[in-house]
Image (cartoon, rainbow, N blue to C red):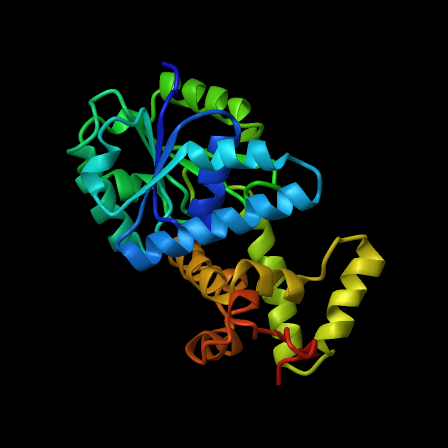
Length: 289
């Protein structure tokens, strides 16, 4: 099966990035979000990203206009009906994701692939009750999607070999490197990454070291491009908290449990760069108290 038209459910940071990457590859894409405000934000986000690409010389202004011209925006779920592949990229909430996928399964053709961009929720949980579960899989992209080259192809118990092969071909077509993982919470990257990030949060929470020294230690001592607390802010502490909850629910191992400080920061709206405050204040570049 060849993917010729793609629909993205959710025009947030991840959904917009996926849509841009698909459009850059020459494929038409529909971005569906809940209302005009969300659609406007998605349009602005993609325009800004393409503007940065023009500034960096990655694409010309004419190419950027062509890319954006391949993207349609809509609040109508029925508009995804003609897609060969639907990628769900709504917030990391299992009930919300399962609900939207259930609606989509009744709209798209029987041959269309249905994928979730979940960071940690098992695909079998999201696919439960959907018709033809062999066409359901995970396609976990990484932020910022237009820059990051990796896609995790998450294979559930019922996902067919044909679906997996089509997913590999699609990833290659949009310039991504795909790796395969079984359907366990966190998949490959987050199962390894989250305990590392949570260890840094606990270290900071206990007053063992400053945020700056924790980050500098891993940058200069281990050659990481950014420290764990800076990375946590970049990912979004709300997203990390949801991933931690999912991993802990599945494995009941303490290294996946979100530390109390993380819960309080999320409750206070200090969720990282997107809120201008997390472990760092991005107006002042000082560590959070």
